[in-house]
Image 1 (cartoon, rainbow, N blue to C red):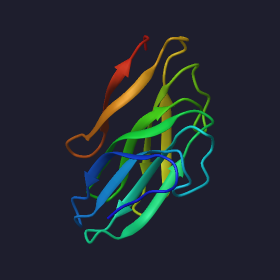
Image 2 (tube, rainbow, N blue to C red; image 1 turned 90 degrees about the vertical axis):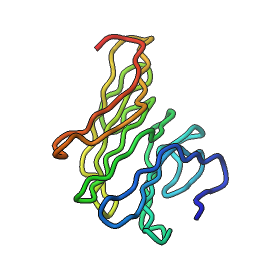
Image 3 (cartoon, one colour; image 1 turned 120 degrees about the horizontal axis):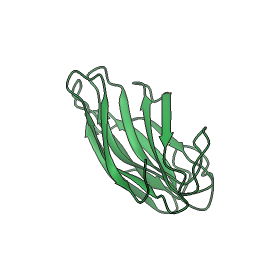
Image 4 (cartoon, helix red, strand yellow; image 1 turned 60 degrees about the horizontal axis):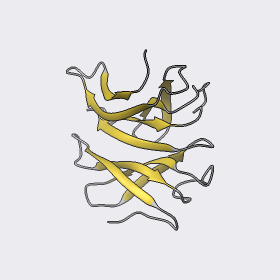
Length: 150
């Protein structure tokens, strides 16, 4: 299977669904993959495919800056947790540079919640590089880097 639109679309993360064998794929795009691109830069995107490779849903979200999904995990109840990097405010006030976000989508691709965090340093770039589900599925763990202090 393939997903793509005019412009540059990167798939940088894939996560298997432990229930039905489907998969979630995410990354960044400069095109209109699942919604109108918010800028000339990149928007984050996330898509769910069935075990047979059929597209079930796709979402695209972003700010006036660069945005990308960089980690994903699917819970046993089929909620999808993602992490990524944003250069703007995804519904919340942002810091001067890149921030990390963590979001939860339900089984049909609807956003359930989103948290964004960073630091107030002008040189404080935060990047999320990985995501894992905690044992018992009561928390998600995020790995990444920061150029500032928390």
